[in-house]
Amino acid sequence: MSGDTATLNSAQAYADQAELDAVAACEAKDVVRAAAAATDATNKANAAQTAAEATAQAYCNGEITTLDNALQAYADQSEADAISAAALDATTKADAAQSAAEATAAAALSTAVANIESSISTTRFHSSVTDVTNESTLAYTFTDLQGAEDYAVYVNRMLVRPSELTSVNLSTGVVTFASSVIADGDEIEVTGWKFS
Image 1: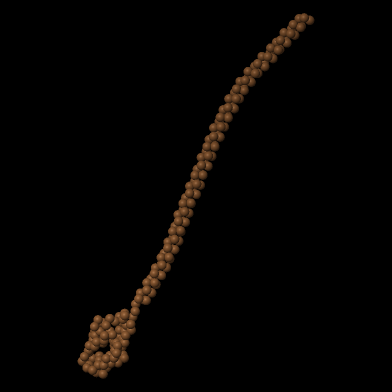
Image 2: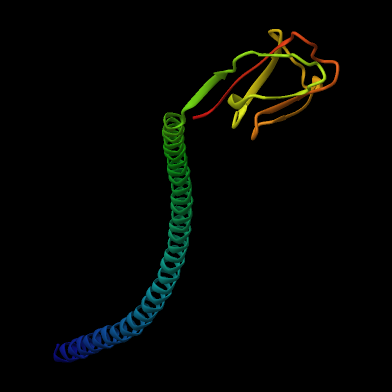
């Protein structure tokens, strides 16, 4: 029986050692597997991080480009709106200034004309009648005609045509008739106006 006990103890010891060896072997394999798993996990995490960074960078670059484009478009539109508003404002102000200037000029012209008209004094004249006593005398002097601005010559109350006069001297008041226009007994008179 003691022999069986020794065998049993030896078997037990062998079994215990085998268990210890098996546990040690398993632990060693677990360490290797754990290290490999850790390395794999680290590699995958690094790859995922690199991919995420690249994706994030690409996204950011795209967003920045989109934002830049949007800001540029906004700036361009703002500039165009500002130019359009400035042009419209300038046109409106120029039109207003032109209207004001025209109104001022018209008022000034009206005032100037009124001042000139009020300072101008005219006198109408109608000479006394001169009788023709010698039809060969063709020149007659009318002092009323001197300095006249406008005049009319009448023979027997009928207007004389310019072709029937040789000359009219407004400085001297001498009216010279063409031949055969006047005859003995005709009445000559002049009318018109001048500045007084």
